[in-house]
Image 1 (cartoon, rainbow, N blue to C red):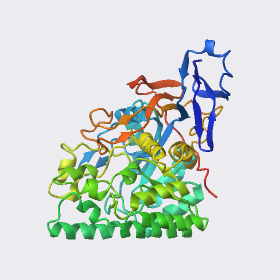
Image 2: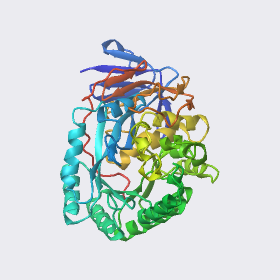
Image 3: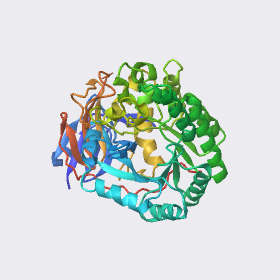
Image 4: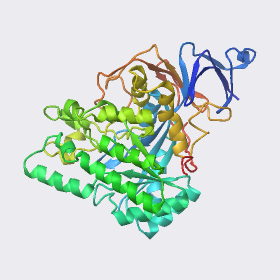
Length: 470
């Protein structure tokens, strides 16, 4: 059994910081001890990793990715192999991707298709949520089967994309009721899709075709309204609700009100909403703004959305930062929407940068070190049935460990990133920190800026129920 000792570092957890050495045996964490505690053990270890003046944290968990996802006549450019290698470079050692059922398709077939895409390809561990694109009796029965037998305990519904993923309020209520019966978590894309479709058609009719109109036809009010409606439906169903990729402070305020009333409602945001904006990025001249098209859309910095999202992370009105990693290249993919913003594939690639971008929030005083680990590692594990296997450095937990160097630097660029994309939405962003070494289940997979792991190392994660349900 391979033994690795990590010495001299400062261990960061969701509850604080402490100086400790960490002993890994095989695929799990054997023990933590005060500095020097394992001095007699060190000669028996295959590796001793020096973490002096560095942080030692649990491997990151990105609870929202879309590898190889079909969208708008193309597919997300990262495979499970390339995407999980990029994740590893960024200090993420587990992802939860989305298996898809579209309207008229069989739920179990959708899950099987995603297993086929990922099996033997992933460089880090992976699990699945299930998208329910057509709520009927067969889909409800499949929800029960997946929760009971497949380790899939979270289901995503859409209030947007009529004809593809959209569910009406009655369908949503039925799925929420089934989720409540199962103890499963209902995830919601909360935008008023039918109203958006009207605004899109009107904008195109006026000749408004530039990328910025993607945001202007998905106004804040339609995210706020859908979020409130989802909360009310969840209240009726007595179901937990997790609202994905929140971008508007008015929608977050609706989540905050529900939480203040004791509801099982949780919000997620993404790095793009914390760093990017309508004015600076999506509204760039020519077609350059297409690289920033995602849904929910980027919002106006002038309206205070970014500041409000950081504040909500501090107050726990937003619980998790995931990426909604859904990458497309500009060439031959984003270009499908030249002359018609509604045909630009929706998505931004961030799986490699989430941990760094959140750490920069520590540097600038937006969040604490403990909160960094909480929103990126620990809460995702607890929310989605992976804790304490993942999300914590504790005896018996998986040996997923990141050594992070606060004295290092990271300059994000398409020239150096490992995602399968021909551009970066964060080109030129500077981070005052750097992922140093990454260990996935006891195997060093990134060291000295080099990938030392292997596709197929990652295992499927059959998940339990959320630890946050009342």
